[in-house]
Image (cartoon, rainbow, N blue to C red; front, top):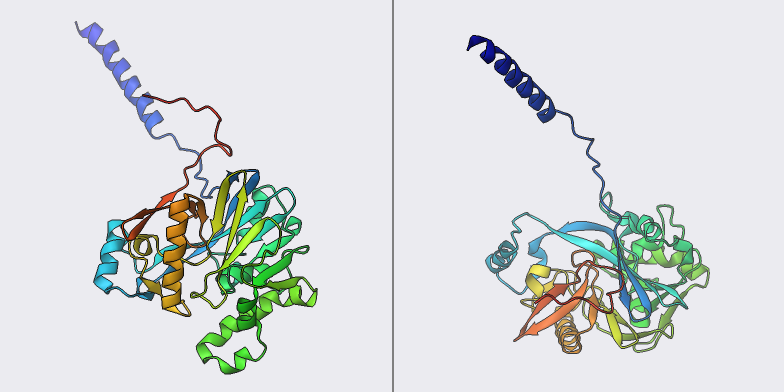
Length: 330
């Protein structure tokens, strides 16, 4: 009996030793990098690429028109209880086959370590900044124009013509503006002017009247309120449409449920609220794609109307083009 127990004990001990060795084997090094910040969507014959420039944290105190405790409750529904809410800086690249068009350029070097990723993500998506021939600005706040230039104020998009609605350009690029606006606003006007300056000097900054089309593939609409010349851009191909709405919304958790909530950045909050309601209502009724600058990346999806409220339905990840015949499971 004793002789049979000893070999068994040795086997058990060896097994424990081997298992212990496996349990404590060192895992490969963590990668600690994120995937490239781009997402591709087919809209008819057009290829739309959402691009992540970065993010910033916005205080809920910036939201106006609702009691702070009600705003906190809406954020809590999404398990958001931090002092600041992460807000994306999204830009969008549209390849129409005739033009390579960029809608907005992100915050570039103006925000710091959390932004300025647009150019690297354009490259990751298979393009080069100098292939962009047209840039459409929804408006001229720093997180939309700073990406036009690098830290030395040289143009990032060497071959692009930049377009903005005339009311927007007149407001921000007026050379006398810095002398008459409040001190806290001067820096924002200076940034808009410095970011567009090399394109103006090269004759590659142009304006258009509200409703005019800078390039044949796009239609525009003035949606003043957030800024005097805030503009939406719409592209349609083969029965599909996508609308780029810029800053008509900043807070996913609050402003869909309560579109009458404004944000401190709005130049005219009542006009901004009216623009948001009108655009959301129309986008929901037409069931078109919508792309927004500050919704969670890729900032693309559909808007659904529910009574006087709205709901955001984000795009689902999948193949670039949906298969013609998708098996139906029942």
